[in-house]
Amino acid sequence: MVSEHAAAQVLVASNRGPVTYSLEENGELTAKRGGGGLVSGLSAIGDSEAALWVCAALGDGDREAVRRGVGEPGVRMLDIDARVHADAYNGIANSVLWFVHHMLYQTPLEPAFGPEFRAQWASYETYNRAFAEALAQSAAADAAVLVQDYHLALVPGMLRELRPDLRIGHFSHTPWAPVDYFRMLPDDVAEQLLRGILGADRAAFLTGRWADAFSECCVAILGGTSGTRIGVHGLGADADFLRERSRRDDVEDRLAALREQIGGSGAGDRKVIVRVDRTELSKNIVRGLQAYRELLATRPEWRERVVHVAFAYPSRQDLAVYRDYTASVQALADEINSEYGVAGWTPVVLHVKDDFARSLAAYRLADVALVNPIRDGMNLVAKEVPVVSDEGCALVLSREAGAFEELGEDAVVVNPYDVSGTAAALHTALTMPLGERAERTKRLAAAATALPPAQWFLDQLRALGD
Ligand code: G6P
Image (cartoon, rainbow, N blue to C red):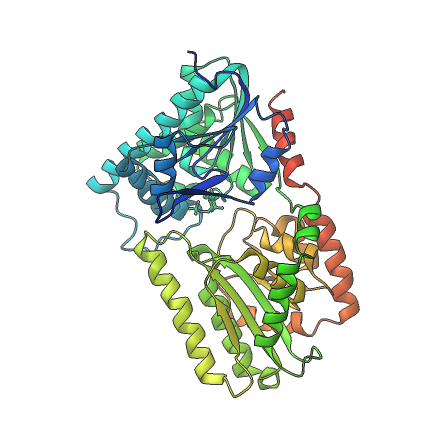
């Protein structure tokens, strides 16, 4: 197979790519480059002629870019039928696989796998096949292909059949479900998902816990991992980038604005609890707010002496359950403010519009960072805050976040369902002596940056036998 991309030696495949396009009113396309770990990881390859990132066109802007032949060097966007993509992404990936791996179903009503699920599953297969075919077409002989996440679980197996010469890796950025929970899926689907990933030479995860859960599913359902190697690469924060980025003028401006909103005498007499998340069910934002309310209720000495700065950025708004969750976050923040707020003190400062510079400003001034997910593959916020913090920050961390494996020792650890326990942890974190806090922050930052994105990416390539 020959194509313009057929020389790629290293390929990455993911649903969300490094660039998205928006279609402006005047008909022009503007490109926005994402700043995530994968983007900086891939840029480590350097020679973009030999590297290719295959991703899906996600919206009208992306589709228009594909139609007009507009693109970034080193990126191939696939214009998959919008209906097929919606079924695969919203239906299967985000409403089924995400829910299974994060254990988010609310039985007895959910899940129910009937005809709608089967139709969406057929789309998921079609969408995975489109990726496998594009990768097969673009890869040079013996190339390395790194397939990312639960959206593309079937790709390794499909690609292996099309191109047995390739070295294929799969990486899961989510947790992996325990075997009894994974078995909620219809048997044939569970088998297909496992076999799909086992089509890779190597299946890798963010922590040993998720890797073990995957292996256990393979043993219980298929009798073994059929020669696929299992690896762990704990993605870390990008210290150089974060330290430089968080000192720029736009962050300083946001810092001043936040200080204004927090209020007080300006002499740091008000402590600040910060959280930054996508408005995501697994992030447990509502229980975090409930814990904060309990803190104010049971320890009145904190009233007017603490502010909870909560950034809950929009995510997956096509799904009603995410829209409802966003509304309950907003409603609870309002409730706390009307219950406890007084002139000159707003207990919860909630922002819902994505602003990276403002997130960095909040990281800098946080006394406490609250990271309490129900379950999380890693959680990079927990790793970014200690790196950026100006004067040290106590970390309240869920034991169910992947980051717990590396950061647990220096965090105040919580069971994410235990609201009263989380309220107590917030008090402990707020009263941590500053010297101890600074020491812990130093150790947290060292652990958080042990494997920066570029190294994380290169380690995977090396492990594939590059
Ligand atoms: C998680 C997933 C990623 C995904 C991201 C944002 O981190 O592991 O694959 O890209 O969430 O979600 P979205 O649905 O907006 O891509």
